[in-house]
Amino acid sequence: MKTKLSLFVTVLAAVLFVGGCVSTDSNQPSFNIIEGRFTWQEAREDAESKGGRLAVLDTKEKIVQVNSYVRDYKGDAFKQENAVLLWIGLTDRSEEGKWRWVTGVDLTVNNWAENEPNEKRRADGIAQDYGVIVGPGDPTSWTGWHDDVGNNKYSYLIEFPIQLKK
Image 1: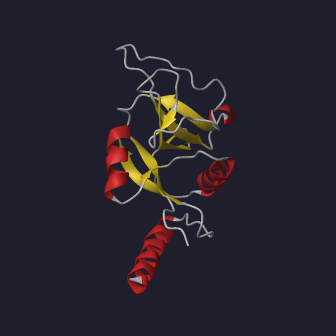
Image 2: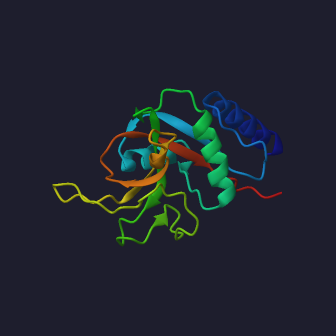
């Protein structure tokens, strides 16, 4: 069993390394940018089909790790105004203004951009119920988390949480 688990971890690390962001600490989750264009729900389903989840950035340490990764990212993820846009696992769809992670845990630390979340609605009434990382961008006030409508198509940030304890 230990050999199979070791092989799985080695293969998973190799797959993640191709995308760029592998945690060097075996007790920390790994993140990777998944390129392509997905709605929030499509991103969530795709992440789960890969054995991960939309990123849950529920600690300052995770936020710092991801901000560094996004700042240094040079790939082909969806960009607007030279800023990468990435869905994360944050939503207030169940209760407007009460932001929760896909794990069901309430938002306690955040990295909202200036004037976000702004809870704007589109002309057709669709609310901005989903979290997206924008960054780094110009103007710099755009850099950070934004609330957005879930049917926009962006790349996403997948997290492979550490679930095995020694």
